[in-house]
Image (cartoon, rainbow, N blue to C red; front, side):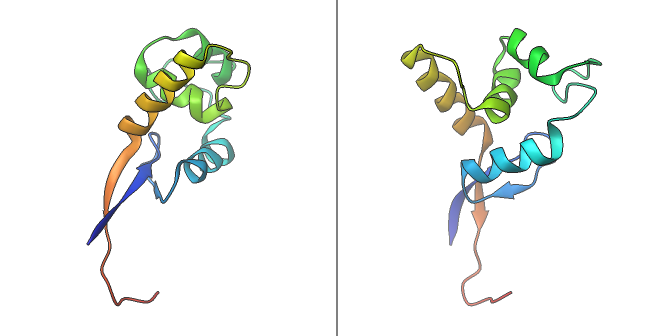
Length: 99
C-alpha cells in the first residue's frame, strides 16, 4: 500500500502533509547562508528567494513565507500547484507494523 507525502527540497525528509514540510523548512533551513537551489552565497535567503522567478526558487519561497502579501489569487494557485507537484512523493506503507 502507498500514500502521498511531501519531501523537503533541501534534505529530502518526507512528511505526511505540506504544513509539516513548511514547519521543518522554517526550523531547519531558513537561516542558510547559501541558496540550496543555485548555491549562491546570500545575506538573506528570504530576499534572494523573492527575487528569483524560476520554479525551484519559488518552491522554497513558498515554504519560507506561505505567499504572505501576495494578492494575485491566480498566481497563488499556480504557485501552490507547482509546489505540490514538485514536492509530492509516494510513500510505501507496510501494514501491520507498529513503531
